[in-house]
Amino acid sequence: MKSGFSFLGDLLKGGLERTGLKGAVREREAILIWPEIVGAKTASVTRVESVREGILYVNCRDSMWAQELHFLRPIIIEKLNERLGKNVIKEIRLAGRGFSKRTGQKEEDRLEKKEDYSPSLGQKDIEIIDKAVRKVEDPDLAAKIKRALQSSRKLKKKHE
View (cartoon, rainbow, N blue to C red):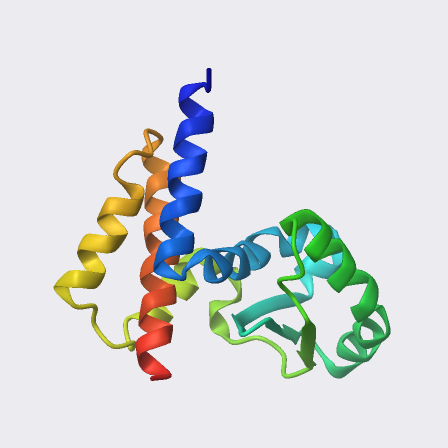
């Protein structure tokens, strides 16, 4: 007999697959695990700007860091995909533009503000997302999953 958590995991997995959002959630997860994968020092001099269609866009404090990480891309991609459980990240594009005044801001908060300029979701999208997260008991986890799904849907609408 399956535990409640196993059943919930299967339910979420199935819902994400049916809505076509599973890959997008994994892409967003790559942003969250970046500091863990590259380490504290590298994370302190890099910011993941976005991830689209398997390409992780990373801004570095300066061009020297971007050049250094350029040679480590295959290793970083391998570690990210190993952790994500699938070949989600296919490429990393690095830039050495430095950081804006928002450097101290949490990545998650910055991404939320960025989404404000995205198209709004329709009622059907909202219902699908709400249905997907309804069974998640942990409110923090539910909120994160909901934000990831909303962001993914908005990006998809923006590119249609």
